[in-house]
Length: 200
Image (cartoon, rainbow, N blue to C red; front, side, top):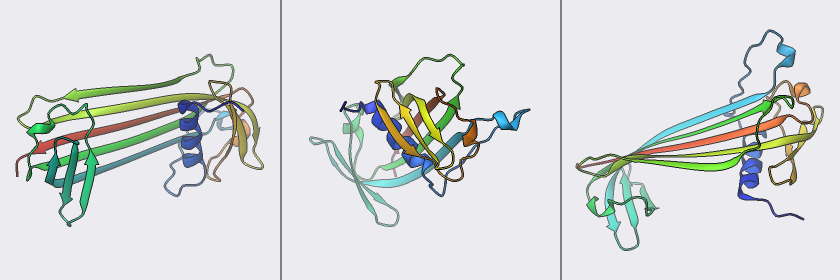
């Protein structure tokens, strides 16, 4: 048996998570002149904001301890990409804005597109008195539909490395009958984190 690549594991995890009946799943069905030709699409976006006070900083091990307003303690490792860690002091206020967006859509087999399995990261560092910046990670994966069973709501996909895997499809995903063998399943995940450090 071939070993799954990281991109295929991402595909399986993402499709499984977002097509197996999560209650907050959002299904986007764009209008077309012929609704019967519409392919299923899934779009999910989650945003959150955390504001906390720095309770302790371990500069050697790059560990940051934060305390939220309700007293909840958060311990986090700071990646080497954060080059101004030593400028963060106990008592500073840190605001973290987090956004996670997932888009899954089906592309017809006769529409030409290259198979994709890639990850990209972009870091923007602001020139402020205290460290701040934005980091955005984007993962893109493509799989091909080998077979689809609309009645049993299941499908078999092939990843970019040739591995086959089976997925289950949630009951709120419509137009499964329009998915054909050879269609492309396109998955794009975007994670963005904006961090601002300020004095209290």
